[in-house]
Length: 328
Image (tube, rainbow, N blue to C red; front, top):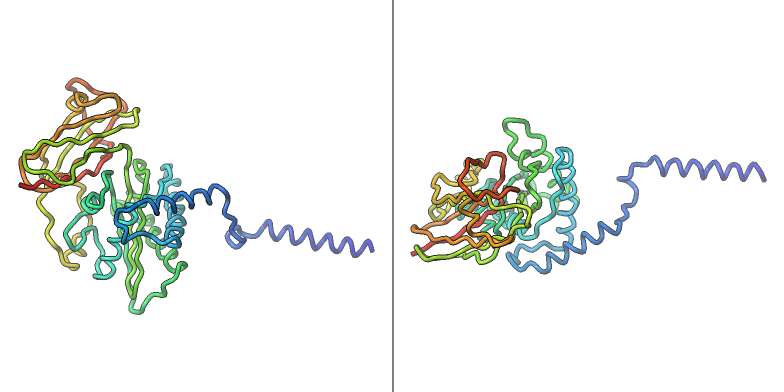
């Protein structure tokens, strides 16, 4: 009897040791309460977002993106960058771009309409600053479309970004940029083509009264709400002509993109901006003397400057991506 009992105890001990030593990845995954709440929150956000509804993620796709979000945040953590949250609108912008790029067999930062990332995000209704990573691959045979394949290919694309070495490491630097606090994730897999895009977002303001379109010389204003801890430091407005259509071959040859244009239309310094502040709200009057697209970048600082002084934006990141169409 004693021998049998001891034998059972030894078997039980061996089983406990095996379970303790097994890698967590091959044990059943238990979703804790925080993770479940996070998923439920994103599902609600996905349902309440009505912009670009035709590029809305199904629940399974959203779950895959949350897995990818964790991979992105692990990459950021290694560089002491804070985690980013998933942005639903930016993800739909990325979905749209991925689908067009895959169906037309190109990879790049412009779409067929000739629009850069900041134009595409703004035209979808975004006002924040966006920075894009683009990845694609293709096969001579059709891909097998499944959740596991999509997940592994997104992980591969992100891994290639993180494997970059200076000076050709723009994608990696974008991922670990400490100013980012949201990211849009897009993918598209069909036939022989796969595309994966990351749209990193800098969101620090709330905006109101942003006109989509105004007429030349008509007065307008933009309302910027800060968090009460920062003050507007600098505003620069770039002008560009209407985008021109591009072919897939032209897009693929273009490589990286600039986050501005060569044509600076207007600058506003901190002491100019301080005149428009009421508490945490700035109401900035604007007018435009030319036709075109006007791209507005806003910078902030913890200190308010109310009198002319020397300043520069070195080390600062734009915190807006407003685009206003101006027509006659």
